[in-house]
Image (cartoon, rainbow, N blue to C red; front, side):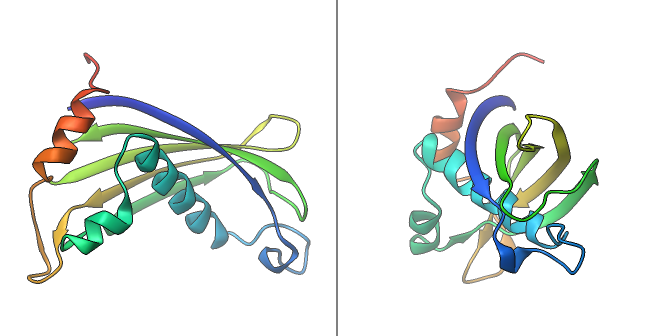
Length: 140
């Protein structure tokens, strides 16, 4: 199912997130994307904590990142997260991270899979989530 669910958050680069060159260390971007995902799903009425309490995990199985220019200490960044696709057991998100002058500095894509916490096996999207996501379905 193709989706269009978009949400934006602001992120300030902390000193502890930078390397010796003063750039945001590349490993921190994955945490930023997680923040975007969690808030985008929350915006749609899907709460990670509730998923986990109901025995469903949602691990990242794929992460692709393209860095165009670096984020630096104290930059105020704007992260736009879009949930673009859902299948029987996966969700696909796209990310656009903008720097302090609104220039696109990083693009990324993640794929997550629904997993039954007790079996550690992939499982179908819970019905209530499927119904919520139908509200964001778009034609291809």
